[in-house]
Image (cartoon, rainbow, N blue to C red; front, top):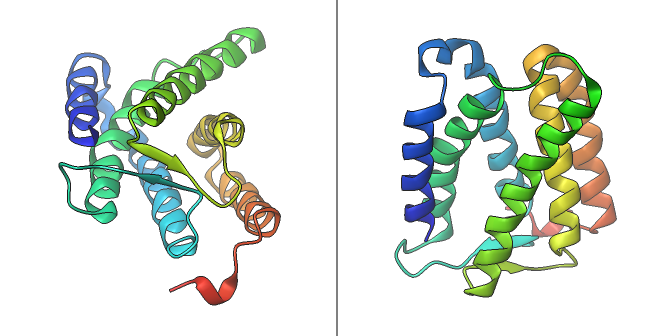
Amino acid sequence: MNVIIGGIALILGWKWGDWRNWEKYYPTILFMIVGNFLYNILTYNYPMWLYEEKFLPNHTLIEMVHSFVVFPVVVLIFLPRFPEKNVPRKIGYVLRWVIIFVSVEWLMTKFNLFTYHNGWNIGWSILFNLVMFTMLRIHYKKPLLAWVISVFVVIFLMVFFDVPIDKMK
């Protein structure tokens, strides 16, 4: 399924991604990838969610598809079309992306391709995606601010979900 998601992302990215200006979005692509890798490192032995895949043999390969295919495409579609003015349109735009991500996640849970662990649930995914898409925009405009906010978000999540330091690899 994650290979299919990667393939769909490439098709959508080819059609709607701003590949001509990829250099403008490259730092935010890396920001998203680093965030994903940080999640995987910090929660390696205490995950909040996992992809359950038959085609790809392990979680690391699945995460590589997301990090190096899906996330760059998401940034290349999301940021160039972000409304510059009108706060309600900005909120609506972020909400549309949250709905897309949560719908895919929900569908994957129905086919046992995505599982929740250690207190995480779809409600947390909705909140996480709201923060994530907001942070992508903040990072694009003010990278240092996004990094500072991200530190506090990570600390909050680590404390709230009681991620044990001794479980880290």
